Image (cartoon, rainbow, N blue to C red; front, side, top):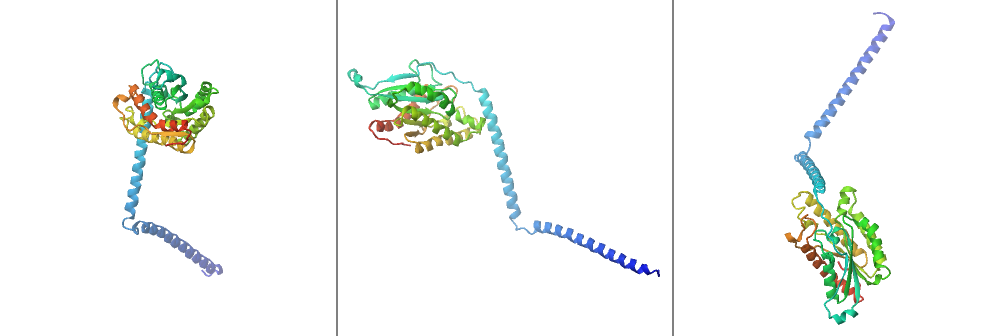
Length: 331
């Protein structure tokens, strides 16, 4: 074609073709480069690297699966136990009394009188024991041994809430204690606080952590001190929940419960070093089958007596120091 514009059109067409070819080759190179990089990342690893990564991934997935399974089974066991558990009725009997030391009748008129208060949940009430007109064996036994050891008249009183946790004790029992003690608080030598058993439940029901339990118990201790005075020794016994036969066949719930119980008791231990005149007492090392009531979680009358005997032996040195003018916060 001899038209003057033909050469111009031909040149433009050639330019367009070259540009299109360059773009096609560029995109092809980019695609190849990405594939090559992907292949290089797969085939240029160190010999054991991929296998290690796979092992730890599988291990972590296995641990996560086992934890989920254990957690699910434990929750099911907890709610199944909660629905099937039949609570025992509180024993009938006195909630206060007096224990005398072994002295001659003529010497009893001049005896010094002290008070020991027992504050807590179903354990301090004595659930698991038969009805006793004279009152719960736990409080009576501690008071009797203390009276004989100190050669003093011991007046004891139980202030308890069946199913109570630390917060409910603060709300109800501190006021009752104030009415009981009155103005003569100087006679109160010790306050034994049985707590923790119902506070474990708050972890599942409300998500309350050990630190919350510790601070609630600290508030309870300080409110009690306001009522009874700073001279009184606060006693915090550990709870032998890991010995309770009710939980032994319930794996994995029993393992979780044992760990939780130890963590909650550890908060009591920490408070014994942070607050004045607070003593933490560890649980007994040995329990027998007949130390437990028929529900498998509360002690029997024999179990309460053995437990009280263990606690009072740890209490007495501190009580003797109080009456001799010394003051320490033993652990």
